[in-house]
Length: 101
Image 1: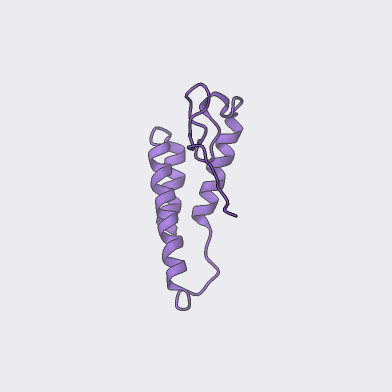
Image 2 (image 1 turned 90 degrees about the vertical axis):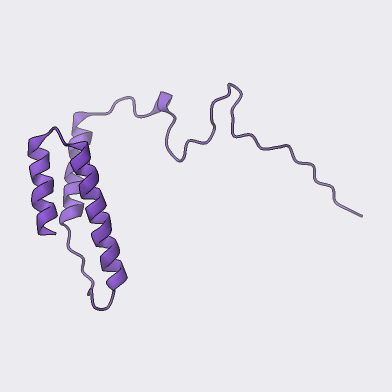
């Protein structure tokens, strides 16, 4: 006895031709309709806090972890500098923390 499996070709397009896969993000039609100013401030404060955190591991024992943390903090700081390039207050906070860490 042999098993025959027939498969339909997979299509990543929905019935109306739109993409079914959104990369884990909501589609633009339904993406966060009520974004608040407080949400942006909360995100900014969380990012500033993340940049300012100190690792609690020894760099001598875990050099790759420390290098990865430094790199991620640097990339986050650059992204924030680009995002908030027109807001001097936020730029000052990012510059101050980036110089300390």
